[in-house]
Figure (tube, rainbow, N blue to C red):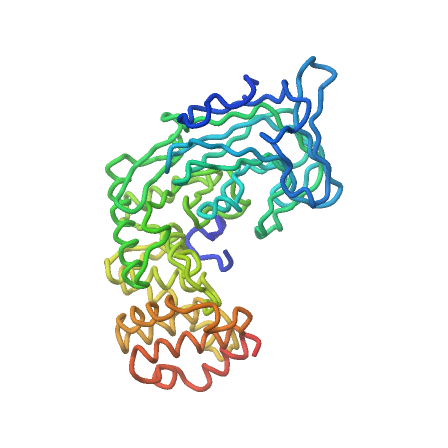
Length: 442
């Protein structure tokens, strides 16, 4: 997760009326969906309430000012994640679709507000994907989101007040929201710029791209190389090796410009011009996107036990350091450009301002620097071996609620086993370990 206010510096942490119903029959290919709710007297199973145990009311309203015009209204005085859901079937696998709807809000606040999304419980590859978040009060206006269908050909779309998963602002919301005129179609070709690589693909808003196809393809090739390095480091690949899409979307919390998953989401409210300029003119591989790709290689994302991992913000960047050195890649941070192994100098500043000054800290960037010291002494092979061992663990090998320091030492034990000697004794001072332990609250 990358903060847009720190686009060069990693921020520690972590997408209108018509006829009713589907326009395909069972067993036929999906060609579109539209529903204006006008022929419905109630929810009949094609639409149903999601999270019925949460606060609030969900109603199908007949508008007295417009004969036959019905819409969904969701209201709650307390924060909630409540809405109506509809299951789409027969979608083309791995295809970009756009769902749109009209929304009207009254005093909506908190969390993700009024939001349109694909149910994350049935779409684990793209849990954060959503429409623009609507707050306050407004008359009817359009919103949309793009999503990638999975290989089942199914997707469950939700019209909601609030979001069910715990984003940094809690996700849940309150107020009143009305939904109408839902449509699902394949995303129009002229709305997006698509470029395909070996392991990754770009789907950017056409009007946000400021560089040409040749420059985009060059960058995509570099990211493909980084992907292959991440895979070599950990010995596995995310999403069963399926291609990862980097998708521009209106549905990201204010202040953040990228979120991991498949697709990796790029906030289309953030000015991408500077990013594209450095990519094209300075051979910048782009720290933020490399970081998000790095997240997709976490043990948990690959389907392994991640109980040992106390800080994947650290490890996403550490995977990047491996790729940058192996591929001699460039990333810009602030006014500096770091090439290959020079990235160590970036993390060294965090060490010098914390542990290097005798400050007890749980600063992931400072710890990152100490891991690179181990690499300098033993080489990357010890990490390749250690990650293969760690990614082979089960949930019972270390407790999920073990302290951060215990997980830190557990990780270094696997590195020591790979190195054939105690890397803690060989590369850390007793004072550094004391400060790290204290900083982690032990």
